[in-house]
Length: 277
Image (cartoon, rainbow, N blue to C red):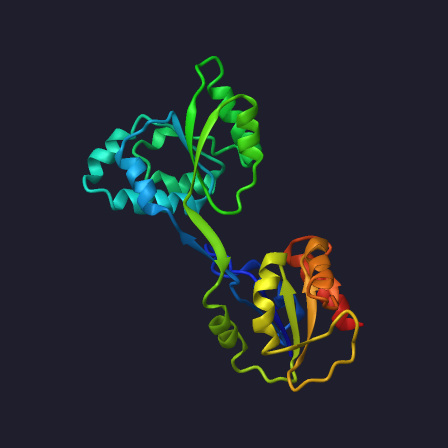
């Protein structure tokens, strides 16, 4: 049986994960299993709560992720006079990067009509949208809720127009504390003589999970393709060239195949070609 471990979280809002489902084309002798690699943790909630309680001393709030929405919700819930706090922010615009973030924010926003920019789709377009809205007005100041991996695209564009951002990190992404348990559960019931594949989706995730994976599998290295071990030999796939380069150059792994595009269909096709050789 072909057993593929997908090092990613399953799609949260779908009845079936699209990557797992894509492997169905290989037939009943194939099984793909998502194992979450990362977890996101809220932080600086007390600081955000104090900012909210103090009332708006900014001209808008920029929220570009569902996690930032969650941080705002948790902070508001901890405020002593919740309704008064909500009302105090009712005339402040909240700028979002897409429909998903807007949807998450609607139940939290004091005035849903103040949610703006959801059509933008990217940080660059959102920045341009904000600048267009404020054209001809005095220089403005925005509270900008961020995570630990935000790119500097939006801040750079705003800085070019001398717009002040007040960034506050409200979440961070780190290796899942449950990865070892989740991996054990995913492998339950599969004999060692199965044809195992591991698919890596990002360099940072690969570095974190590799020590755990080595307790279950033997990996081919870039220098030796004939390793012997009491653990099952696993084949390795990368979702793209950047991840593949990291696997080779940093982890010194032999990469069996690279997906031509970062999507489920291309990944399945890349593995199918290897299996049929």
